[in-house]
Image 1 (cartoon, rainbow, N blue to C red):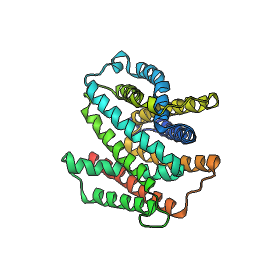
Image 2 (image 1 turned 135 degrees about the vertical axis):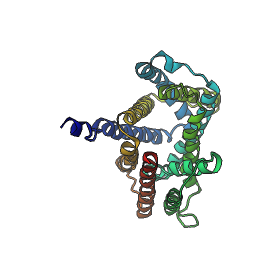
Image 3 (image 1 turned 90 degrees about the vertical axis):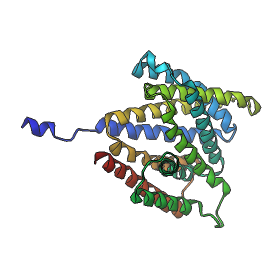
Image 4 (image 1 turned 60 degrees about the vertical axis):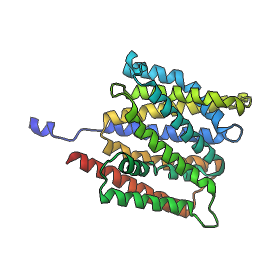
Length: 294
């Protein structure tokens, strides 16, 4: 009887809950950013987001990681990662000016496929034919959404795709960081480096912040930080194969926020393309889990 209990599957409810809420928070973060692009440069939005979020990020790191979470053995690596983070966020926020929230969100979900390509081409990792097939299917989903050569094609649609590429580099760049550093160290230094680097350029695009917009900037920082924290914790409470596919619920939230706030409705081709990207992404996650279990 005791062995049966010990072999029973663990309840991953807490991890699933944290992942779902965390993704919803990040989707709200994106909605705040889109609302702010009407009056501010994406760079100023990113700068204020990081400056406001940094103190809370430091407190969270101290709570979960202790004082050692604030020490880095390779600060230059964090600075380079901060540059990638600034570039990705700038392109993503800029896409909000021209694209619907759901469309931009769907396109950024191709990041895992860029990770596969980069890992195989430059890091020497073995990638089987099934994962290559998933990459091609995911790329097909991108083509369905952006429709190159069609009457509805916009060059700006490539911005979320470029964002996904830079985001993939950001994820892979975690290998540059010293293995003794925790995920909380990465979070603190990514936010701090983002604030520092954007501060160097933001004076050239700065406009006075209107008092009625302060709550939007606060919401951007609060929901962004809360989302990252909860998603980080979700991967501690449940296996990646359980919680990672839930990242795609962000598309549902993006569609909802887009409709409620801007009355945006993704067209049929965007929905079909998003479904293709999600299906290939979920396949990739489960395939990686199978390989890790072998």
